[in-house]
Length: 397
Image 1 (cartoon, rainbow, N blue to C red):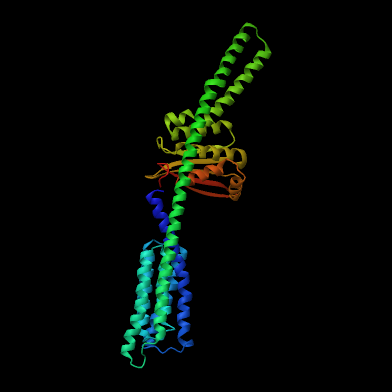
Image 2 (cartoon, rainbow, N blue to C red):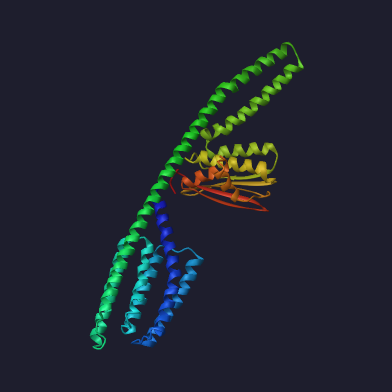
């Protein structure tokens, strides 16, 4: 897996943890709010304490709405964690020590950093909160001679240390499993790439064998039939000649489909133009093509197959009258888009075709995604639109 792909995996899990902690934060704040009156806790600065807790609750609600509505960047995890720590410290300072019922709740929230898959940070923050909890009790026991330092405080301190160790261990397990997933994706990508290369070599060899063998034999047979017809005109020979021409045309079409020479000689753009002309000759629909010059990228064979499969599906099933095919290139990707005004279909059918073992459009999409590309498909009563993006260099994105 390339570095950008690894970064995207890390970013995905990081932003997912931000959403998860945003959801979990509100119930915990609710418990903190309820714990005060239920446990009959008398705060040192009740007005300031209530203001901080109310502001924290409103901020948590707004943050939850933000992360659920739009993507967030990895730095959001750090920002939310810092806000949590500051809010908890402020609540601790204004609670007057509260009781052992309240302070552990304040310190449990930062442990949510464990969801960020950073074991070192989890260990540091978890240990710091445990010692911070003990420090607050020591400070307020010195401030209030009647409070003292109950033995249960040490029990809670030990519990927080254990919680820090447990969440750190959980982080290590999750990070290790993520690494295994990345390794499996690398293996899968290599297997797909090798499979595609072997498939392309086999197609090329088969196309060459058909071109140099059966197709040449048909041409020789046709010359013989034409010479015989010139010497002895006969309708039967004319019929044989027509059959040979038809068979040769079909065989040439098969050879082109297996390994289009124009793709190897002139590149993807010209090969797609030839493919468009081929479907235009069939007369089933009008094609509007916007094809950028892209040269001979490594993934040209795959994108050519995607285009052929898409146009073939439109020809066989869509009953469309207009088709638009577009090829665009950016600094990193090639994007092929095919849209039509046909009948549309249920995209779930593609997954079913894969499970049934069919090697059509669905398998091509799997190869695109395995090589670091992406497929966007939408289909309805007004037609179908498929956009396929593939990296300029196979396996990178």
